[in-house]
Image (cartoon, rainbow, N blue to C red):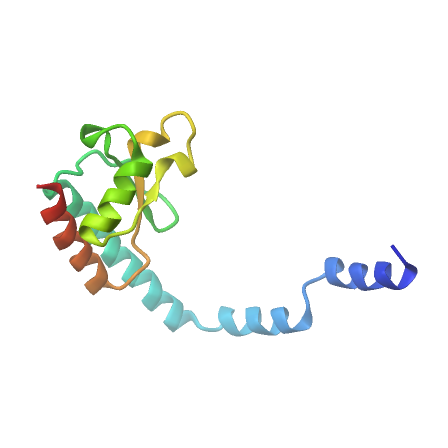
Amino acid sequence: MSARSSEIAQSLYISPPELSQIAATAALGAVQELEAVKAGYAANRTLLLDGLPKIGLDRLLPVDGAFYIYADISRFGADSLEFARQMLHGAGVAATPGVDFDPEHGNEFLRFSFAGSQADMKEALDRLSGFLK
């Protein structure tokens, strides 16, 4: 690495770029907007925690942090990748196979995000209801 490259690298790694610092300062001042987003996540979380068990996905791990629900799908088979693929093509609902997070038991789980709109969460539940019957 040349001396000039080293100086540039040091400038990038010592502290965040000025633009990032300005953006972070603005974001920290957006309390009202961020609270609205947080309230939306809470509403979506409640919607899915109430709705998923009603359509047959009743074995859910505790939801603490992030914006995901980890659901046990083992009663439908033990291949979360294939189940996610079938669900995407059959219901038009995407979820992340648990094998992406847990190589030992992840094949029995799907991860559902509740970071979308409430209308999307309701539609996903409706589509999944038909798919799982």
